[in-house]
Image (cartoon, rainbow, N blue to C red; front, side):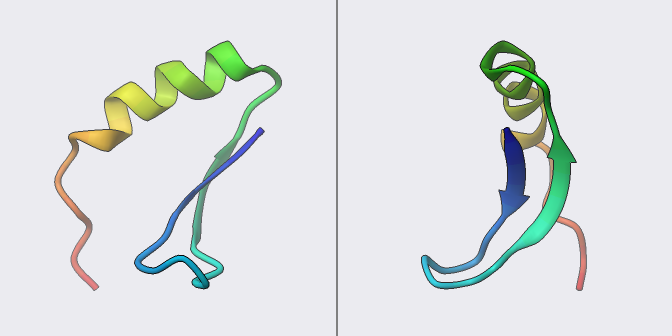
Length: 40
């Protein structure tokens, strides 16, 4: 599983991490989803 942050549907996105299983990706997503957006 590859987790990326995207701004729009057709955006390639910024790689946040690669995870071996769905459960690992979901755990990371719970932490990342509500974290403040990085400044660009």
